[in-house]
Length: 101
Image 1 (cartoon, one colour):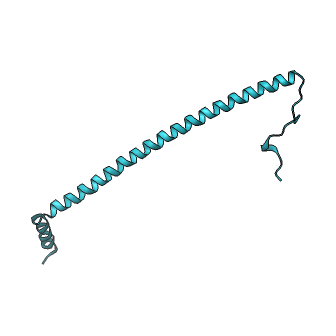
Image 2: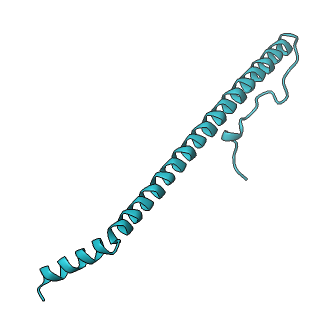
Image 3: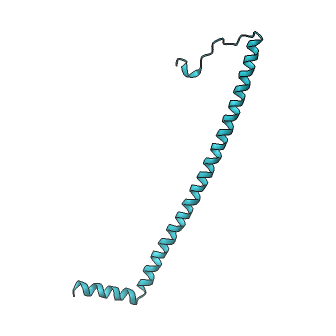
């Protein structure tokens, strides 16, 4: 038997025995699974984007509050110096420039 006859026989068997429907069902199932996975991935990406936006909003709000209280403290320090009160310590050293122990 030649290879072309074998291929023809296999194709005839698949088509005659419902093999084509099986192959279509397999490809359809794989396609559905992939589309479902893609939809789930899109939802996950959207959820991550919403969470990122909320985190950015919270960070901006915290930064605004920090700046507000920093300005209030600076104003109080200025008022105390005008009143003649010396700060303790007189020359503060920020943590980033302190020597490590």
